[in-house]
Amino acid sequence: MATYEDIYGKRVKEFDSDPTLDSSYEGQVWYDKSSGTLRSVTASIAAFISGGNLNTARRILGRAGTQTAGVAIGGTLTGPAAGNTEHYNGIGWSTSGNMNTSQYGMASDGTQTAAYAAAGANSPAPIVSQFYDGSS
Image 1: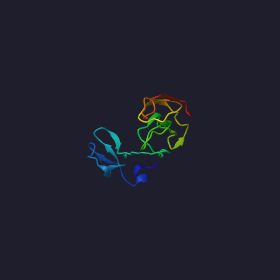
Image 2: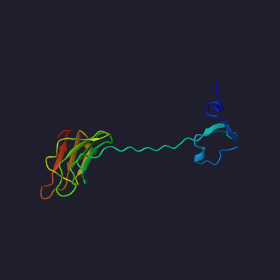
Image 3: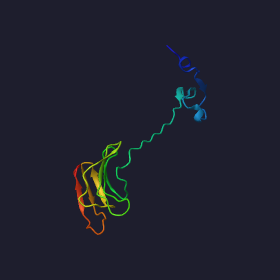
Image 4: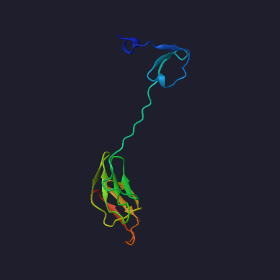
């Protein structure tokens, strides 16, 4: 059977207690004589992933769903409200049926296949509530 030294080219060090650790200890293994345990330092890994941009850039939009099944509803970039509705699958956006009445700044919630948008702005159009079934 191979030893740690055979595999990694280093011997396991012995300490009376855990050493003061810094990034140079990353991946190191040692034996803590006071606790009788084999110890190691692993790397801290952080990851971030970003998905694609909306097909139609806008702000003050409604949204619903989850990180991998979301829906963006209405909004505005500049000027009048948009009626665009787009689905997100965790990677990118695809267009879907537009809102009946374009709105922005509305309250919204639900899932990608059962969402609502209510009390948005679109002067001079009236404030309306709209329901979304995943396609229209």
